Amino acid sequence: METRNFDVRSVDTETRTVEGIAVPYGETIDLGGVYERFERGAFGDPTGVKLFYDHKEPIGIVEKTEDTEGGFVIKARISKTPRGDEVYTLLRDGVLNKFSVGFVPVNDRMEDDVIVRTKADLKEVSVVAFPAYTNADVALVRSADTTNSKELENMSNDIEAQEVADRVTDLERRFATYGETKPADNGLDIRSAGDFVKGLQTGSTRDKVKTYNRAFTGMTTVDGNVQPAWVSSNIRLVQENRDVLNLFSKEGLPASGNSVEYLTLGTATGTVGEQANEGDDLGYLEVTLTDATAPVKTYGGYTSLSRQAIERSGTPLLSTAFEHMVRQYAKATNAAVRSALVAGTGYQTATLAAGTGAGWMSLVIEADALIHDNGFGSEAEFVLMSKDVYATVATLVDSAGRPLFDINGDGSNTIGNVTRKRKGNIAGLPIVVDASLAANSVYVGSSDALKVWEQAGAPFRLEDENIINLTKDFSLYGYMAVGITNAKSIVKCDVDLV
Image 1 (cartoon, one colour):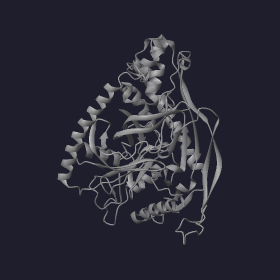
Image 2: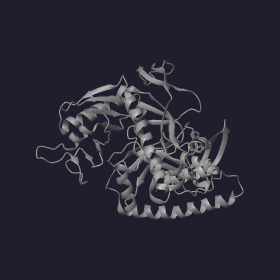
Image 3: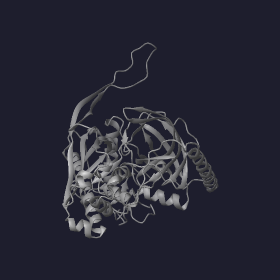
């Protein structure tokens, strides 16, 4: 069974279900030199699909699937089990924010070196930590305490039985296709980034460069290997330091060119309505699109390490240097997206009428309505704010001095929740705090407002010529472009707290 991963973008708290795009259509990704995309209708109308945690433990069941133009949409219910409760809490708090699917390929075709999945058997959808695809997400997570306990017990039993059956089916498929040619990623035996750099200097790991590039850009269980912990850790470092970038849609950078061409949504006139009489003209709807380009820029840096340090020091020194550069790359690319957001024009605006709970609720509701009514079908997905605004919001109290944002988790007398890690939600929209935003900054937006095109695997481009010939200077780099694709999906809020 193969797996692919997808982003989680927003969390709500009404009923105990999780919804979103499990598989995006038309998006090509680089799996370490092997390119893949899914065609609409590839999964048909599957039944018996389970919700898992990290492809290992069942936590619920997929209740509904829908094939849409944007991708394969699922709605799943999270079981009220210890692991289900834990995963739900992590989803709600934004700690876990990715989807992954496990599937068995059935029919494929090749188009210009891209494997196009035309038919696949969907086995399970998992909540995981790291993405491969970027335009699939959990759109909504709701909580409810009304599920019948007997139903949950039966659901749990069904999941366990189905898991056994699925594992048997997968083993049968593996034996049946044992002689088929599979991509082989052997030798993932390096324990740290330091060991990797040291091995390149001595020549012992030169033949493993392609294998480890694949480990960074995307692996599947059919490869027969588990992604090494140090690779996963460094990918996580990138994601953890890009709160703003992670809010918006992302695609792989084209293989060539110094700029990316894209279309921005402008205006829409007319309406779609009922045909008055057979043969009458339909209502006219005009949408204006504008050509735009985003320059491809290089983000990276290097550090100087003496030959003696590489050859004679313990690997923690090299690993620490590697991880520091990874963090700096993440922060630099996050800053680039932040700058593009702040410099953008054409945003809708809303004003905070009063610094009270009611005032903040009105602001968010107004911003959500502006995006819904004018953003070409978009929906508000997040509230991005500066740290001073978060400090003000988190300490709001009612007339009796009680907090208006839930800190203890009891959910009483609140309009949202906050955590010490500067996360939370207001009126159901996730709060994201960026410490580098200017004071009094608040944006309510949708992920389709901006798009990021980034080189696959960036900044992890482990190549002989970039490391072996640089035994003193060690660098990490990546190419990225940023463009505003739908200005109507962002509301810039005036919340002067002075």
